[in-house]
Image (cartoon, rainbow, N blue to C red):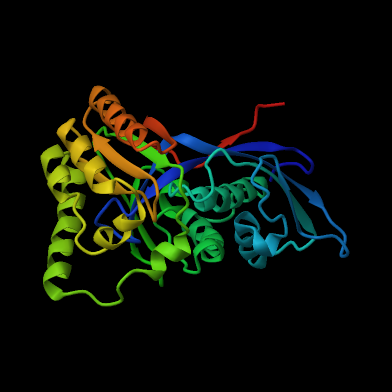
Length: 318
């Protein structure tokens, strides 16, 4: 257990959920962007709160634990921690913009529980931490889902086979370069979920199952062509893409520039593309810039790769 009052620093990576065809079950972590957090534990009296949250950014997110995704995740952890006289103090600097579609809420929730677990001596498993952090996702979107949380904690590409009971499978993957564009519009996760159909045609389900299986096989076999062919969504993306300006044109331009494929990151509005080389990933970024500049739509882009380690704890800082 880390001594009382000793601060640790946490880097919690952004994540791409769904990976096009794997709605709510597939996701991967990226090296950039990421949130920065600091945490420590101190002894508390009965009158003191068990969680104190301090925002270091401009987003003015709630600091009441019950209304903050990091707080909700920590409350779930504390329910199973057998030493009640402890208080976690958390400083959060969100470098992943809330509502961007690259796992901003997951980074806060996952970073908080990984940091807390480190402080108390790593007594909880990664599966436990995912289970705690999903409470933050439920606060943000109304639904417990782990497709951002799992890769944020495990690193790499993850498959969530089941939520109840929780079963997460870490998948191997070849070297993949990721280009992300975040058009400066807001798409709320809860809104993006509310427009989805509750029933789908059997023929569409069969095609989707084939794409999911093909994508997993492609990742495991390092078969880039199979990965590219499998990055197709016939159920979720056709509905959600109407919320994102220029989506179809952007996707076509990126594939013509050499991208393997891609689609909406999480609930959007960010769009991601996977490429075999950094050179192609940068060419894809250029296409993204040109399209949204032509639409006079402000946007941010990232060229990065898959983060294999997940949330990182840094102890040697002042």
